[in-house]
Length: 327
Ligand SMILES: N[C@@H](CCC(=O)N[C@@H](CS)C(=O)NCC(=O)O)C(=O)O
Image (cartoon, rainbow, N blue to C red; front, top):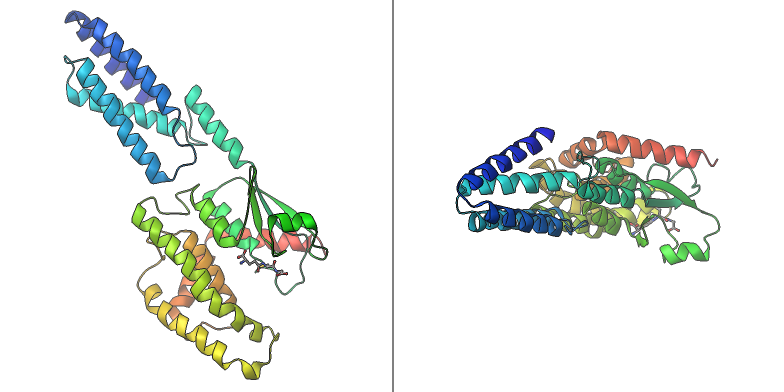
């Protein structure tokens, strides 16, 4: 970063020197003032915008700054204007990323502001649950995503046995999890993961196509696969008469038969690992629990790939420890 800034300053110094010799110092100074104005405008960067939107802003800013240089300072080589503008925007972008900002100044405050906002992520789960659901409570999906993204968060508890009115203001079905992000409170694990996907490229592809595919598979995991696997699991848990399970076995098999060739052809659903994989793998994990993927090796291998990721291991261990601490 320091080397980048030094070379940028070197460019500016050389240009000013040349401009002085060519009698264009006034124009150069005016361009510098306008440049400072543009940098100030850059501070209004969309702090919470998706990665692509941020990239579009970066490109627009490069074009503005470079064309300003070309117009205001005709003595300078256009390539130098483009190089200078690109370096400037790269410095701004880096310096507004949490954990990256190296140069103290207004832009590093944006990074601090982001870090501060992220520190306010609070995941709520039950204070305790019986042994059977442990390791499968849906706060695990959220923990997993937060661990993958390296986002700071803390976990709070709500009573499992006495679900109070406060609980219902966050989760109208008296379930868990919910996530608060500042003054925003979100329920539904899918909605929470999509929200977190906006925060990190580790959770959501940056390109529009990859992003659309990830969203598509998030919905598929919840609305096409979990919709079949959850009622099927009631029979496995002994909550329903096994003699009546055939339609549910068939329904799940139909979904798995279609998912099998998809997962045989790719490692992750939307190109790179994303929130879609967290949801799909977590949904399939419940099927694995009852040996329901024996006839679907690609699905089984996919669950293995996903659950050997360090972020899953940590999320799982943390959930187990959370409930064990309340025994
Ligand atoms: N669709 C909801 C389902 C939430 C859900 O089923 N939560 C379970 C724990 S994994 C729960 O709170 N169960 C207790 C209950 O339904 O009373 C989501 O994905 O967040």
